[in-house]
Amino acid sequence: MSGTRNKLRGLYEGESDRAYRFRYAILIFGIVTILFVMTGLVRATQHLVNPDIRNYADALYFTVTALTTTGFGDITLPGTTGRLISVVVMIFGVTLFLRLIQVLFRPDKLRQPCLHCGLVLHEAEAVHCKHCGEVIHIETEGLS
Image 1: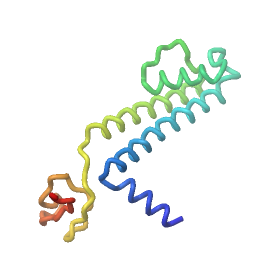
Image 2: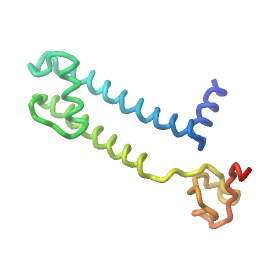
Image 3: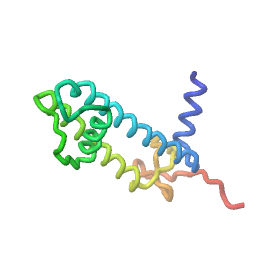
Image 4: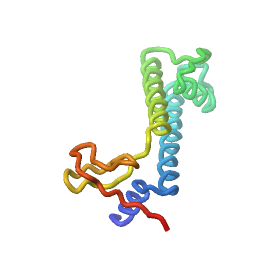
């Protein structure tokens, strides 16, 4: 079990194209999971009390419009419970959107521990550690 965990950690923390694809796959998996969990929550709590939620597709439609904060208003969840579920779905939507923006536009960092202070993440072109100022030696594949 520990060996598998270390292999996954190495894949996630690596700098190869495979590691980047793995991180994006985890992000997409998380988004899809949250989408279907929220849809299941809406369906389970609303299908008996809300005539607009007749099937799973209606619950999925509501969830997507709430997660994307589009909110067309053609399906709303009545009552206090419905409003609270709507708020939770919208908060998750805003959070996912901000996380996606962060992943797409934040520069990638390299994992190279500073021998002086132990800081691990550094910019790809870093020469000095941002934390302590010591010279860091980022390992590269070099020129061949």
